[in-house]
Length: 231
Image 1 (cartoon, helix red, strand yellow):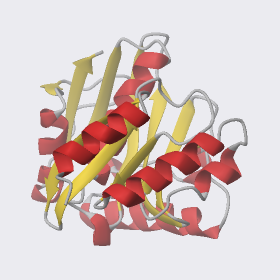
Image 2: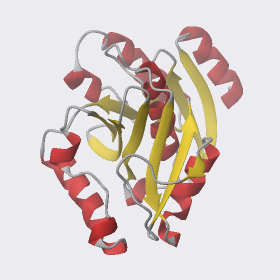
Image 3: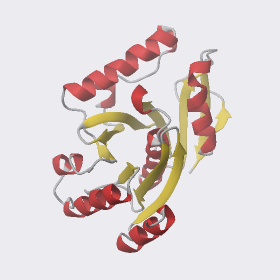
Image 4: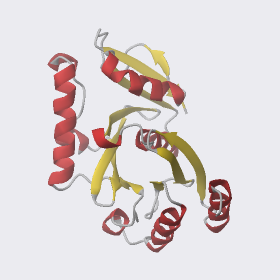
């Protein structure tokens, strides 16, 4: 039986536009493929799966998606997780985002809640991505333009059933790459100060974010912490 390392090396030779890696999760080992030229062109951006054959099938389908647009991209996961740009239509994503807002309000006072609702995510300065396992939304994230050099991470969420499975890392890696591609030189964020948000803060620290003071229109708030990193 081919080892994981050998299998990923073989895939790297077959799909030279992708970077392959592994990540240990509570479910086992996740295999990750991330396209290195960003998602400016149509097609498959990223895949997370536990199976080498599933990953190859997803990447082959992704090759066939070039130029076909969003609907084709959305259905090309072959059991893995894909990242889709700008899909804010339909009741599933509305329900997913509503659950996010309700969860934040259950933890944070309303005056300290900064999560964007569906209308906020549709504003022209915001770019939104969803992570999908087949047709199921399992995560989301967004970038909000603050000025020509500075952007903010918004709406980072993974569904409860898929926490600690590598989806949040994949989304954040994608946001950083996209922010660079868009020409930003700094990426900042606000998150909660409560223990509930500790895994999120650790994730941001892992990706090079450092604690800072309030930025943009934020003000000091005991329920908030702020982080930033240069790109």
